[in-house]
Image 1 (spheres, one colour):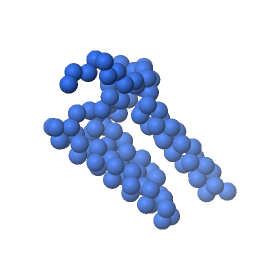
Image 2: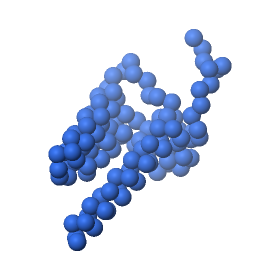
Image 3: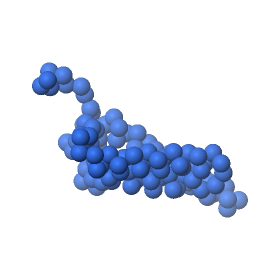
Image 4: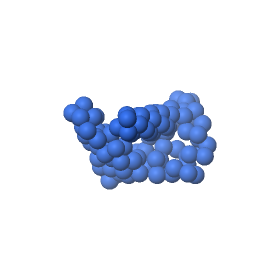
Length: 108
């Protein structure tokens, strides 16, 4: 019974982290930058993804494969931090709110 409780706790943790990460891709809550500012840089987000990948790859072949994929994505984010020609995407901005495409203010 203890094993089932541990699996349930881990599943809830994965759903919470996954939901939070998905939310940050589309909408940035106002206090997120204050309390989780590491998510607004490639380096911080990469380290966060590597941590998630390690937590995911606990046991079982499918779990290890998923964990390795998340770790690879984290490593790519960390590598992007050191490429000067890559700009941070719009969802890394710090003012919060819904991301919209405002083409009128763009200068070509």
